[in-house]
Amino acid sequence: MILARLALGAAAGWAAYAWGAHLLTPGCVWRGPATRRHIALTFDDGPDPAWTERTLAVLDREAVRASFFLVGERAARAPETVARIAAAGHDIGSHGWSHRSLWLCGPRRTEDEIGRPQRFLSDTIGRPVRYFRPPWGMVNAAMFGALRRHGQRCVLWSIQPEGLREAPAAQQVEYVMRRAHPGAIVDLHDAEGLRHAPERLLAALPRMIAGLRELGYEFATVGELLEEPTEDRDGRREMPI
Image 1 (tube, rainbow, N blue to C red):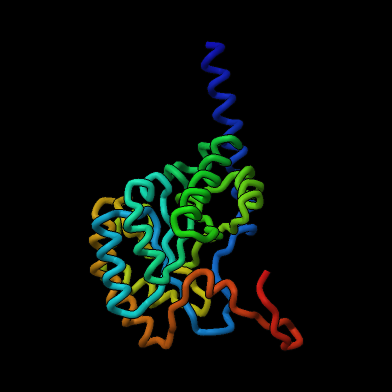
Image 2: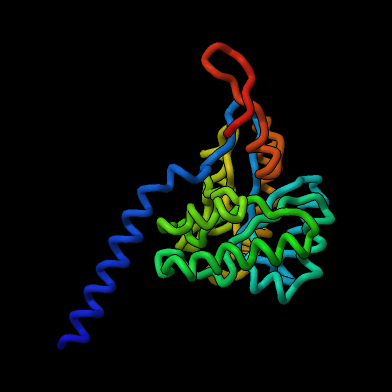
């Protein structure tokens, strides 16, 4: 009985920790400046030696540069794919080491989930990895200090056509077209999270790219999107913080 009460108390404590930290997500980036008709396609959960390679082939054929948020332990098993992503001019960000929700991580585990992939990916591609996307968008209070220590910025998204529920390719395309806006960050998945998610992505991606171009959008990496200047109230050009 005593152990059960202690376990319940610990669970309640971590739940409060996570929910309280979730209120801090304004410290994350949801979208880029709306000053230009640019949009960023981003891909989570890879690299997958098969599906990520096929995604890269579509992006190459369509002359689109994008951003890949990679899971560290998966990247360690597919370094050649990581190298090809970087060589093609795409941004590489971190999606944690093991894809564990930060809601379930204490400060020490949070530091490892952020610091370990940042070091590995930076060493692999030969330049600092500047962006981090928490798995499922779940944050905790320890994340922000860890990101500061590792020189990273939290990047979420403003459009997610497929989240925790499966969405057919046509539905994903329609969803993105309907919600597209200047500075949008689109969250896509090029590796298995949901069943057959990469398969649906590859069916949707060419139509998504064509549709966005018809709407007058150009594509940018997350780095390019966030580094675009904004205008203050007096019309002066400023770089985003």
